[in-house]
Length: 487
View (cartoon, rainbow, N blue to C red):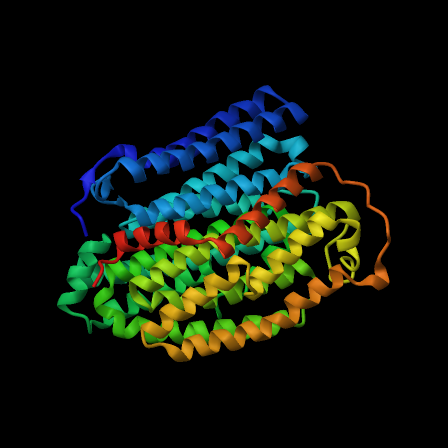
């Protein structure tokens, strides 16, 4: 890895997000109702776009890795790639949330929490120490706890926030214990210094215990079995725009920091954590997809789908640099697909005034042809059908696993994908069930134009990455190479 150079400008994308959140707290005091909402949306969009532009400047005009706060944060192309995914997820989430009734009352607060959560995720992806990791983790987690419970008029939303708070706190405590054990074994919280200590004594029981606890704590955040128990309830109860952001951005940040911990802090223990992650991948892929077959609530079904995709992504962690490249491409594809799918579900909920189920969506593709078509594209991408990006994402992931000698993981992934067709196609067929074709267009819910634009943009991205992915693959390859030295 290139020797880090101290450069505060490396945190510019995160400072833009935090600065926007501070401005919105003032907006919440000075303005009310729709004016406050519209200002908040403009500030939020500007901050996410500004963050992405700042990342581009750093990417194009920088040279080497940048260290901040005595190496607590290390900003490389890997971290910047995650920043782009988080910014894109936040931008699409804001567009999809525009018509949500709660934003008319508390728009600035919602966008401020979203910006703080995004900044925490960005910082977590750049963390090079368990100290900075914990601070970043709690920054975005606390903001998400509030966002999950943001709809105070809904008991389901309040329950979602409470469950996420309790189980998320447990995950954080487990992570802190693991970090303490690794500190006891190596005398440092910094990942690069931990690597030196672990390499000197890779069989240390204290280090092994610390690694197990760290994996368990981060397992809560990436929602792998058996640490997934919060995901279905929280995804179902949280406001759907919040679920959209969580499903995409949280997964990107959590997997990014997991890769950084494994590659930077404990590479000498690869013979221990690689088999453990392989087993977790198998269990997660099969369990989540089988359980999803029984779901009728679409948000809950997509929650189990998210758990299943975490299992696919675990394959990348044991596959070296090719796996890291496939992981970043997969995360970019999944972010667009997941935010788009949940946005369409949110529109359906606003129109019907109730939770979206398979039965409530029957024939919906005829009365809402654009949105129905977009949702069908997202479902096909999640299932891995060409020419959607989901097909190429899984193909590269499976190929990386095979090249790394984990052919059995790729075979299990294919089997899990076949199982997933049972529920993805069930929703798709319900959308175009002619027995429920109304033959007329439904009246639009408030904000449908913005949310529909969000879904359309996400669908275009999914198709574009499925037909012409070279630029994004090159981008992912450069980011992966900055973290993992080429052989």
